[in-house]
Amino acid sequence: MEHGYADFRARREATVWQRLNRILLVLLIIAIWLVIVSLFVPPYKKLMQSRTEIDNLLQQVSEQQNLLARQTREVTLLKTDVSYLETIARDRLDLMKEGETIFRLETPRAKAKPIAPARK
Image: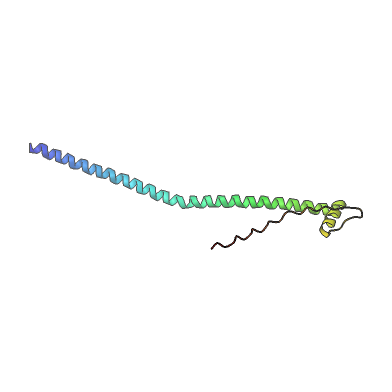
């Protein structure tokens, strides 16, 4: 009988060590995975920030190109179109031709908020 109990005890200790080895292996795999993830997360965040910055810069480039196109068109009109030049000059200098009536529409200004009386 003692031989059977010793054999059972040896198998039990072997299974305990096997379980501990499996747990250790799982923990080791998790630790390696965490190290790999920690190595790749900062460059990934930097990549995302760079992409966002690139998108913002591309938007600014597009806005500047639109502005350049408008201003180039205006310069071309000022150089080539006499009636446009005359209209712009009269508008900016507040001049008018004889017999011409000018109607100016002013945008309403923001009204100041009334100051509420202090409560006692």
